[in-house]
Image (cartoon, helix red, strand yellow):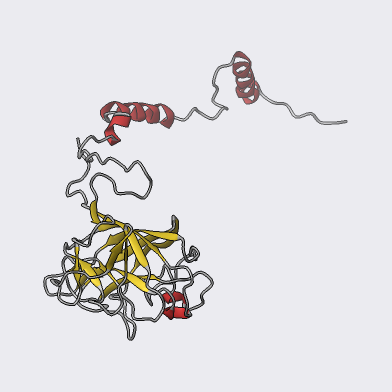
Length: 300
């Protein structure tokens, strides 16, 4: 005979009550109590939101400035010709803007003819501008003569010194050379900052054709004691093609030895009368624009 376990009413009553409560959707002692922290957290968040001021949404006008106002420059009707604010250094008529680089006073004696100026080898030598410059944009056109002879550096050699810091070849030279099918050391070819940089490409034209440089020069700055503060930088387009991209110079360009900086403030622009035996090259349409940077931040 099997024995049955008997439960008292008090034993089963809690389970009956819990079942009834669940069926009615009411909380019971058998369920986990709702978190008492939730209402408090919601209240705290709402209270914090009420106490913290809302930040205004940004507007387009906050980053739009109307000062300073750039001056108006009228571009030339023909590409490559001087704009309205340019200083014309050679217009095909005379060398009134140029002097000998030997002493800075003797008149330049290169040959002016047919709207161009041709290097005179054996004359006063290099010529430089009467005016001095710091930062600028420079445009120069030149032509290597048809039937040019010689090889390497002895073939249509000249140079544009972006800052002439003394007589002779003192300064910072952007090379001019016949580099059309003419091999030489690449940091001395057309488009190089002489013996410091190799041009990005060779964009040379044939002898007899006119070529151009468009140059942006950022002059070096020096401390009061003559030490270098910031180096010089040069950007150059040769026949419309970028050949020097904000190149940092290590100092003056030298034929022999390592470059170094020599303190100066403003300097003339110089053209080289190279002593090689090849036919002399010619220049035309030389102009410069002084670059003056804003001395104030954009504002309203």
